[in-house]
Structures are given as C-alpha cells and as structure tokens.
Image 1 (spheres, rainbow, N blue to C red):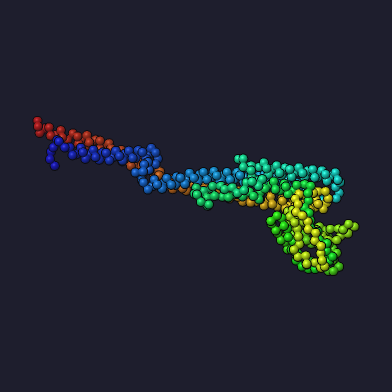
Image 2 (image 1 turned 135 degrees about the horizontal axis):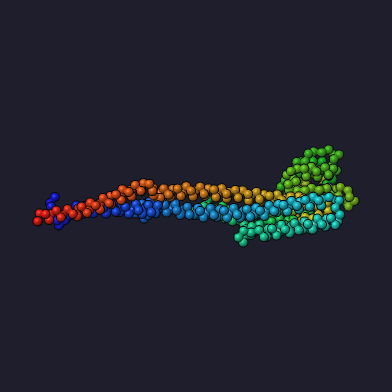
Length: 390
C-alpha cells in the first residue's frame, strides 16, 4: 500500500468499525433501558407479530376474568334471595302443618291465614325486587343471560345462565292464600281389582302432562270398603306422593264413599285406567286452580303438598345456581392460569435477558472506547508524510 496523505484508508476502516460498534451500543442501551428485546419491528418482525397476538389474547382474557367475576356476583345475588325464599317457604309449610290440626279455632285459623298471606307477599316482593345492576333476576324476566368468559368470538367462550326456573313471583302466585286446588274424586263400589293392578295417575298442568304408575298390593274382598287403607297405600308410594295427594271422601251422611286425588302443583289430576276398578266407577274431575287454604284440616293438609312442591322447585333452582357458581369459579381459575402461561410466552419473546445484554453492552462500550482511540491514531498517521517534505 502506498504512503499517501489524500486518502486515509486506516481512518476510514476504523470509522466504519466504530459506527458498527456505536449501533450495537445504541441497541444495547435501548434494550437495557426498556427491558424489551424487541423495540421496533426490525429487531424481530416475526416475534413482534406473535407477541402482538399474545398481548391481545392476554388483555381479552383479563377482561373475560372480570366478566366471569360479574357472573359469580349475579348468581350469588340470586342464590342469596332464593335462600331467603327457602326460609319463607319453610315457615309457610310449618303454618300448613299447624293448620292441619282440628284443634285450631276459627280465630286461630284466621291468624294462621294472616301470617301466611304476609309470607306469600314477602315472596312476591323478593321476586320483584331482587336485581343486579338494574336487571331483575327472580321475576321470570331475566331469561337466559350470556357471559363472555373467553377471549375468542365463539360459543366456547361464553357461559349461559338461565334463571327461568328461579321465578319467585310465580311461586308466590301459586301459593296465594284463599284458593285451593280442586281435587278429582272417585266414587268406587269395590277396590279389589284396583288393589291387584297398577294405577296410572296423570297430572295435567297447562301444556305439561306427568304420569305416575302406582302398584297397589292385592287385598281381600273383605277390604273392599277400606278406603282409608287404600288412600294410605297411595300416599305411601314415593312416586305418587311427589306429585299427588289422596284423601278419603264422604257422602252427605258422613259415610266414606270413595277417595279424591289432587295434584300438588295445582294441575288437574285424573286416573287414566278407570277400568281397573270393579263395576262402574264415577270420576268427578276437579279444576286446576292455584293457591292454598287453611280453612279446614283437609285443605291445610293438601296445602302441605302444594308448598312442598314449590319448596322442591326453589331448592332445585338453587342447586342449579350453585353449580353455575362453581363453574364460574372454575372459569376464573382457568383464565388466571392461561393469563400466566401466555404472559410467560410473550415474555420469552419480547423481554430482554438483562445479564446477556449487559455483556453485549460492556463489549460494545469497550470497543467504542478502543475504536475512538484508534481513530485518533489513524488520523495522526498522514502527518508522518510531512517529515518527507521537511
């Protein structure tokens, strides 16, 4: 290489290396100061795309977690009101049991009815006043509510909550005092054949029909007139008693002449196989009415079955809500785990390894100092040519 002063190749080479070192130093400073490995798209274009998608998913899941917690609050609000409704129905059932005793005077029955009316009024108020953020929950208007508990736009990211079965206003209406479900009566000459076969009772409540088969053990001909025993056999059957209540009927002279069946839910009770009985039985079909009455021991006893049916319905609704509460809690826990794992994945892509980057920074810093010193030396080299001119 010639000894020239017009072009300082050593200085140019040193300057180029110093520029590269300064770029590396600037990149290290940016990463160390931000804590991010990717500060612009040029650092890692593919990684930036993945990290952006993960960030959106994490943010969506965090909002979904808040949505699920709102769902927990909704079902807990409904559960609390239904728990109070269970207590009210329990008290109403106690009143019915008390009224089913003929030791009560007329004034005592009036007092029982007054308290029962107050209880049903509170059930009505509870159903109409229970709400969450202005949305009624227990009056039948809530329908099916959807809660977004995922970050994606598909059905798997939603939990549906139906409160249709948790309708306290309909419970209060069904238990309004003063009316009584009309029973279907049967005047039967003989029970022998009935005792040896299966009876099928049908409960028709609106558009819903429910059938219950009752196997009644055979009895001797001497027991044909044992209506009390027959009614006892019916009521002792778990399937029958869950839907119906049977009572003994009497004629104008007070003589037992048959039995009557009422549906516990206020529907119409009928017997589909009347031919089971010997002779020609007479069926007098009752009408479907709502409400309970405590004016007689028989009506009060019938009210016990009606109240129990509503109590069972509220308990079933509450158990369904409890299952939903557990499902929401599980969703929140799963979302928390997903957020943690996705955040870790995003961190591995975007976050800088501080120890490793500090090594790069120290290297670049030393090279920058060395390059600056060498550039100064390279700039001094052409001055040696002046000695040749001296």
